[in-house]
Length: 405
Image (cartoon, rainbow, N blue to C red; front, top):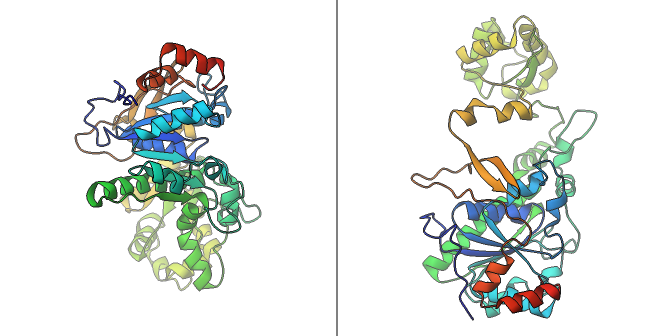
């Protein structure tokens, strides 16, 4: 079989994962989020998509110059190949791709990978050095293994929604937090497996499920509930177990959040912001637990002070008192935030038919500029990838005519 040559776009980049090839049968959020992190660091990511439309996340919306916001966010720096893996010819191409790959990632529907012989045990018998990462909703064992899982369902099943929202109404988290959590654990698991392969010669498989990922993030409320006897209350934008910690409205209508984390900060808030040092020793507010128990009374005191100040002056006084604070920004205000603009965090990235501004990855490595390559059109790289695998132009034409690609 002809070797799968590396794309010119990533060759010679000097990035940490240059030379690593990832083949991903991915859709939606969790797996694409994991593989985009690998692509940012120089891995070649070949995204295998269905002929006739590709990843269904491409059609979630059309808000980014005709492209879906989710897809643009999750799929830069990848190559897209259209492939019907259920066909004999398509499966042969996938096997050829895996022969030259270091990592295989999939988040297909429950049981689909095993039915296709793409589960970790089956693949590792043939591709002995391949790191296989399976991402699922509820894991591969247990009575829930076959259930479909989407982000909001996982938020509900792990109890997260019961913690989020107002006292009268629960609410989902406004981003795909379960998918993101699973994607990050898949990313770190793949890196760990590659390191193990390089240093120990073993090739562990990686399994991540959305439920386990979000369950880990539920650790604090889980401990609080199991050993405290009741779960944290829903308190809107306030902190359920720390007070004062939440939003207050200033005289000019601006919303300002403040956070008191310890007794030193509580004393400083009383002295420098509230103007009443004696409040620090008030028996209602003398400890963190008491301040939570008397939250309404405490909030009334703090709100009274905010009512005397405009937002800017309130934040100035909180800064002087060394109390952490923030404005309640809209997404539009976030986009113009000085923490992004002053630190040069934006880069231009190509998308089909245009360009967009994208944020650099959060982890900054000294001397390493992450790859910020274009978002591919569906099947954009099919012909070039097949040619690198040794298929002739006539072979490619026949595969296209047969609906394999």
